[in-house]
Amino acid sequence: MMLNTHIIGLGAYLPERILSNVELSTMVETSDEWIRERTGIKQRHIIAKAQHTSDLAVAAAQQALDDAGISIDDIDALVVATTTPDMIFPSTASIVQYKLGGKGFPAWDIQAVCSGFVYALAQVDGMMKSGMFKRVLLIGAESMSRIVDWTDRNTCVLFGDGSGAVVLEAKDKNIQGGMVGSVLHCDGSYRHLLMAEHQYNGNAPGEMSDFRVDAAGVAAIEMKGNEVFRVAVTKLGEVVGEVLDKYHLKQSDVDWLVPHQANIRILKSTAKKMKMTEDRMVVTVGEHANTSSASVPLALHHLYKQNKLEVGQLLLLEAFAGGFAWGANLVRWSKS
Ligand code: COA
Image 1 (cartoon, rainbow, N blue to C red):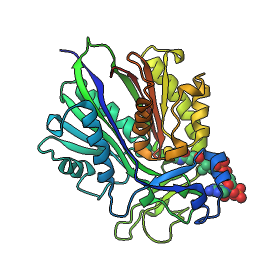
Image 2 (image 1 turned 180 degrees about the vertical axis):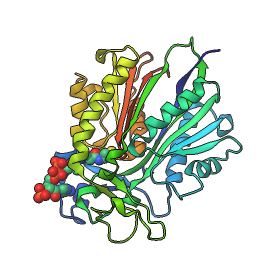
Image 3 (image 1 turned 45 degrees about the vertical axis):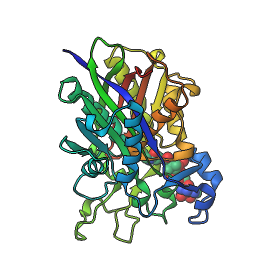
């Protein structure tokens, strides 16, 4: 039997603590006005001291399972896209499996930073179409606040914490809707423009240390913001065209643009490129800031909760990330 992958449940979680631009401007030299104007961000959620990324993941995952009307026992595989794992190992996915009360089925993490969910969805879709798994729990979860240098105004204003999850089910290909397909890219020659180095016994690879801002010796995000911005706008403009061409679809076929939420100006530029009016694009960056791999599933969940999705509509998910790694997925909505 030929198979296709369908989204049958969605969930989301944002930590309680909200950090507003105004509060942030008491911590570093910035202003609400600057942050809103340059990024569209108004606030971000921050993980509690006692919480880990796996806790955020579990909250979203449980909601997605409930939404699908199934339990963890019905799941065949669990994937967590994250850049901020609880530990170097074991994987956050193993910890999430345990916390959800699952056992036995495979669980693994994917690391493609802000493109993690888009990468993971492409990977899992391929595995499900091949018949390897019937139901997969796919989560994007991040505690970016843990790898932000809170003295660096260039980066700390941009990120937030949260998680989003989907339950995927393989169904007969003749059933209408489901995943159309994906394209993924990476170009490691840009790796030094956006990164967080690990300190293995203090022996950090020297090659990428020329613009370190973090003196404390802990991994922290370092970024050449305006260069990232420039490449992101170009590559996202290209990838949305590429994924549509690949599956013989047109810009006008897309009902909803579900972009990674990094900066409102990047989002608007992609919408413009696609000749889409902004009311067909999901915007959560104002409330969530950049939640890395959680951002696309959080945006998707936001759209779902607004009851705006209709069966048969075409969704274009896209993301751009450190690496640089970027990609896009096309989904024909099938959940009523
Ligand atoms: N508050 C006030 N001023 C700030 C600031 C802040 N939080 N952060 C930076 N600035 C200052 C800079 O120091 C610079 O000052 P200078 O000209 O005196 O040196 C000035 O603002 C302009 O900096 P620039 O980097 O040119 O601004 P920008 O218009 O490119 O906006 C970003 C900065 C970071 C918002 C923007 O480049 C961006 O969004 N880049 C992409 C980031 C991203 O998406 N990363 C994740 C990808 S997944």
